[in-house]
Amino acid sequence: MITKVSVFCSSSDKISDHYFAEADKLGKTLAELNIVCYTGAGNSGLMYEVEKSVLQNGGKCVGVIPQFMIDKKWLYEGLSEVISVNTMAERKDILREVADAIIVLPGGVGTLDELFETLALKQLGIFFKPIIIINTNGYFDEMLQLLRKTILENFMQETNISMWQVIESADKLKEVLANSLPCTENNIRFTYIES
Image (cartoon, rainbow, N blue to C red; front, side, top):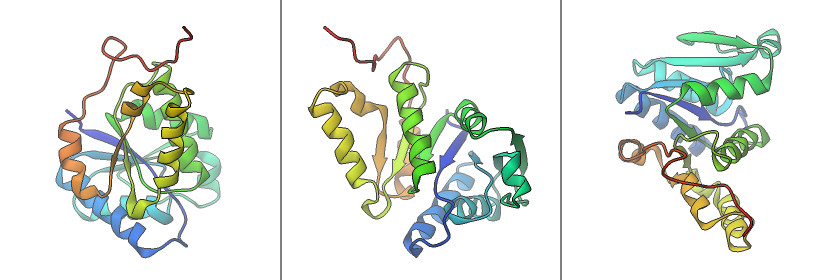
């Protein structure tokens, strides 16, 4: 049963309103499902929108943030709990460790770094939890096409495509979470082995 998720997403305030609307919907959905939301604790962009929405709808939101970001006043101080860490790497490790699933909203290089590192760890058999990509307004279309190309050209196995799930909107999240089970080293093997 999924009771905690970590959300990877943008901290930009300059993006289109439909991305904020989807982030708000995600936060509301998590609160309604009584799922604790873990984020990067930022006070801007989609991260802040998710956090606000979770809390305004009666949910719990925990932030994980490096101390240098707190020093720069990038922390959203209204969170249920804040976990201060030393490095970005430590932040990512905690976000993966505490969650029963990872949810990815649109974002820039930071979000893509979090997503691709998590996919790499899943491929290596180190991380086994569901990874759910919310493809708002087709934002991830080109990335997903590239991932399919890595499979078509044998840089990854066909089974790798099951490492992630894609939904178009948080409207589908309840259904996907209900049917998402973590894989284990006993039931699936993602690592490419030379024959």
